[in-house]
Amino acid sequence: MLHSLYIINKAGGLIYLKNYTDGIATLSSNEYLVLAGTFHSIHVITSKLSPVPGSSGIEVLEADLFKMFCIQTPTGTKFLLVTDPLQSNVDAIMRKIYETYADYVMKNPFYTPEMPIRADLFDLNLNKIVKQINS
Amino acid sequence: MQGTPITTKASFPTTSTAAAARAKQTGDDIWRNRTDKINAELFALTYGSLVATLVKDYEDYAEVNTQLDKMGYNIGVRLIEEFLAKSSLPKCGTFVETADVISKIGFKMFLGITPTITNWSADTKEFSIIIDENPLSEFVELPDDALLPPPASTGGSAATGLWYSNILCGVLRGALEMVLLQVDVFFVSDVLRHDDATEIRVRLVRILDEDVPASDE
Image (tube, rainbow over all chains, first blue to last red; front, side):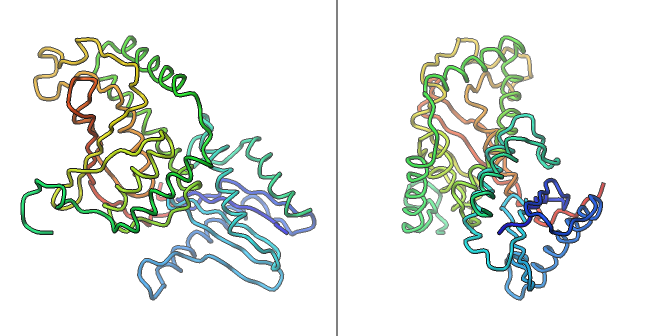
């Protein structure tokens, strides 16, 4: 079960947010922005704390009722996926999401990189991916 | 590296053969199975009319080169995501590896060609890409005045004439900048200008700082 998807640009700004399940707690849009910025900083700190040089930052956050997965692409964009704790195969899902992003966000000539994403085709294709998993 | 001047192929740095073979495999695989293809003539003609329009509009080859580079840059910063999403490559360890990946996976994935990487500088910060078969310029013959530097307009050395495929330089520059490599990319020679080979030179300027400070505007 996928709960939410966040996309954070390389400066720590939240550029996309979607909740997919009913009944999960939501925050105000301002709180989401703060959350994204904070996570971005934590990500930097975790990679700095690493005893092994050149490590990535935080990748998974586990709690009793949810898990949060984070991948950072080599360009600095972060994809955060909040799932229920039993969700498997998250890597493959992340990859699909990233490919969808490359297709319908980055290849849209009228999208300005690093800016909030408003693209119906992207929403549509993400929904397809999510539906397969959540139904 | 030995201190000998770079004259023979043997002294060029290369990635280990295993890694090189893997890159080739990945590139071939993506090209064969995961790339939507379009008609090569449509592609070549579209690019041709783009360049021709620019030449008409600007009436200055140096400016056209600049515009092509700019367009390429804007393509590059977007295309890199596609490249990373499809290839899911880990970070390159060295610039030598980067060059290998550009040729065997990057060029293969988007243009279906695998250009040769050669002419490394001694500090491995500069290399050349030799394109044997350039799909952009298949039907092109440059007009005579595009071959020659415009007379005395730019005061000598900066005059260039038209680099027909200059968009490629921009693409490389844009894409590499997004993965934190600041590079200079420029054409050295082009068979369209009756040179022996089509050669693009890539020079690593610096590796950008990874931790962009969070919003300091």
